[in-house]
Amino acid sequence: MGRWEPDARGRLGAAALELYLERGYEQTTVADIAERAGVTARTFFRHFADKREVLFAGGAGFEAHVVAALDAVPASATPLTAAVRALEASAELLIDHDFSRKRFAVIAANAELHERELIKLASLSTALAEGLRRRGVDEPAASLAAETGVALFRVAFARWVAEGETAELDELLRDSLGELTQLTRRTTAGRRR
Amino acid sequence: MGRWEPDARGRLGAAALELYLERGYEQTTVADIAERAGVTARTFFRHFADKREVLFAGGAGFEAHVVAALDAVPASATPLTAAVRALEASAELLIDHDFSRKRFAVIAANAELHERELIKLASLSTALAEGLRRRGVDEPAASLAAETGVALFRVAFARWVAEGETAELDELLRDSLGELTQLTRRTTAGRRR
Image 1 (tube, rainbow over the protein chains, first blue to last red):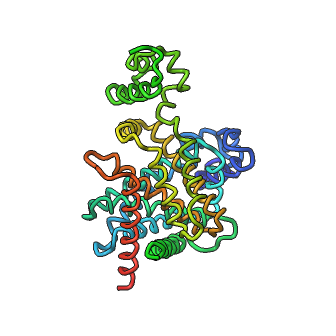
Image 2 (cartoon, rainbow over the protein chains, first blue to last red):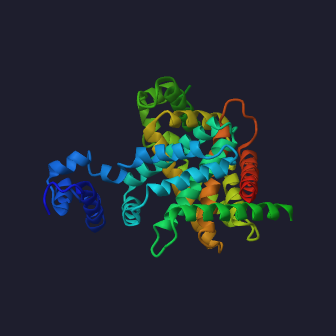
């Protein structure tokens, strides 16, 4: 492959994930990634600051996208519906199922990467709670809806990247909300007995 | 105060939190903590491995306590009730409201400490999901109940340590579950319209 092909970024991302899975994240160098992608290390650094950024480059855009989606949810939506609809919009960014699967496996295998992912999700929850308060939702409902929305997202995402799953992420998120609704009903019913 | 008083550990913990709040965590040394507590640095190291451990020493015991409480919840309890009851048992360990308040403020102000706290909570969620599967709860209900339980715990804990809050942690956890149940009902009602 030529060095200056326009999809160098995509090839670098795919090459990095292959190598992280084959050799481990720690054992992979930027030189290895560039070689596998058929470009120079200099080309790598035009697209990513370091090998970690290959996995997290989309992070800031992701949160902004979800918060913008929240602001666009009709005011009539209840807090938890609004949070879940905003998170459903993330499916528009996570279109590469194969990349997401591999990324999930790499992150699960490395403590430092896992920490970073947890921080990203905690930040997302904080941003969603702020967005809900801007919509006039009081505390603790805003924090509860945001934290619960992110909890649903975590479960739906883990299902989405599981072997053999064919449903889309936004469907799995709506499913998870439906199942949580059932769980809370059973909980209340259990308390009445 | 004498150097070998039996409550050296408690005084060291209180002194450390005071200093972390006054000067910042990064700016506080073990020597400062020992001096404030009226003991030697050597005494500090008999109780804690380093200044971070003052904040996280209870972590492993905390998770084990919650998992043991989950195992003790009657089999008839629904998954989400079981998760919340297990987390309510954590209130038995978090008896020092003042310590918890100060600890929360210190952790919120420091990125590294915040990361560690997030990892602890992620580990707690994983342990709760495993415990629920041992009780015969299928996926995704086990993960959903565990993630939601921890989300409720985070919200309840933040309320508990807030200025002026007088309710107990276990009450706030039950309250949060009740409010979530309301939120999911309103969500379902909203969808029917």
